[in-house]
Image (tube, rainbow, N blue to C red; front, side, top):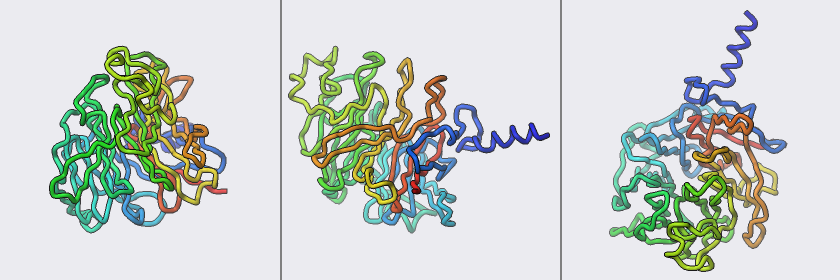
Length: 375
């Protein structure tokens, strides 16, 4: 009897976020390693394919997009226990509604080719409706899912991934664009070029410069090219794709069609081959120790076609006062078992709450974690 109870207890503490208890989706919080003083918990469960995150002004509502599914969600902690207990389904049947952003009371959602707006969303959670803001982005599904965010200039930044692993597409592809959502005649402006597939970006809290992650091309072997962390202080920079990767890897198919590598912006940091860095945010809170202030937290989704898996972790990137990368450190890991190569979770996005704790979405375990610090 005691043995049976022990087995039940083990199942209970490792049950998956989607409640199904499948062996490849167990939540194994005890396997996650963080620096001393930090703790991690499940903030929201049963959030299918939890991807990009956004929040309202006071952080009482968290919006969640997804890529494999077709829904957009809003999550709320109604009883103040530090864990979401209410989930609203804001839309269904959308096409890869990965990107979510909030501004002036309205929620914006990015599908593959459209930007949607849910007006006054906080008062319409039970009966949400949307309007189409813009619907002329390319409809290619390959790298068509989008991360979106409003920049310091008030414009909505919208990436358009390359519609392939490697190709030389028309100009709108492999770029980061920006649009004025209040314009009567919206026309995307290309801010950065040569960006294969970014699914995460943010602006430095002091300089307001754009930083973004970029996923490197596949099928060149296990160890090349690296994925990238890039710094774009100015409009019009070109980051190399499809001619050069990671600053110094000449593409075997398209390299000779481009310019010399010095013509393209090198990465601010190489993030490892095929680690799939997605969401990134600057930490501006006061809960974590002071050394983390203005650092970048990056969610590495993990390799999908490497013979030995890597990634599946959160890293902390330290910058100096001149916005130069000092180092990258592993901040949280354990979703990948390096010995067995088993994977039970894949971090996607990070979001800082008003109290300084950090939310992390996981589209494999279908949940959102909360990372907190206590001395």
